Amino acid sequence: MACGDIDRAFGDQQKLKSRTVQQHEEIVAPLRDIDGYFAQLSSVMEVDVMPGDLDPSNYTWPQQPFNRCLFPSASRYASFHCVTNPHARTVGDTLYVALVGSAGDHLADAARAYCCIVALL
Image (cartoon, rainbow, N blue to C red; front, side):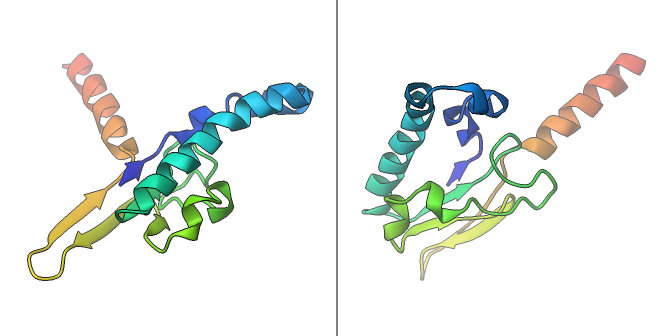
């Protein structure tokens, strides 16, 4: 399960409009690399990819899955799944493991609140 923050492949999205074609290619290249990596993994195992707080997805919870067109090579495999954030999955048929994943945003929020409470004491 890959949990969030693939947005770093996009760079600063606000500045995309003023970039040259060469600069756009430099921005998109890491996303192509990620797609290739996910395609390699998907050829041998199940892969779940969930968005994080800064990824190109809605901001409110639950975050909706990435559009599969972001990962054209990996999307060719039935074992590749774009999933919501948070996401739950079971692995195995006879002896299975239940996995629950999130990009950690709620944990970061709780940590910020805890620091504020400790500061008040």
